[in-house]
Image (cartoon, rainbow, N blue to C red):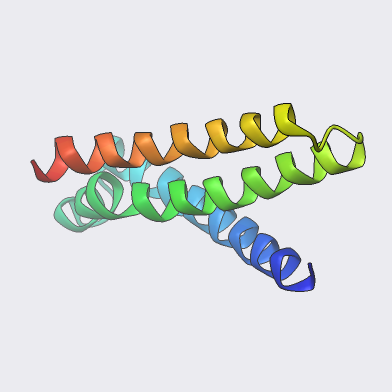
Length: 101
């Protein structure tokens, strides 16, 4: 359990940093105060996968802890968690399919 808690903490920090980078590159796409080619490449191509992976890890672990804490860790809770995880993986798959064809 300590390993999962550490992974969750790391994913939360990765998510926070990627959000800040997302905001900076998004503003730069509008205002053009940095190099437009590099920031567009970071914002549109690379940052989504990093942020979405960190988001999946962080929220799935929080969802798991919430279910365990409320004594809802039965078949319904496990299927909800599996469905949530599967939908997030499907989002990444759709993104990769659209982006890289």
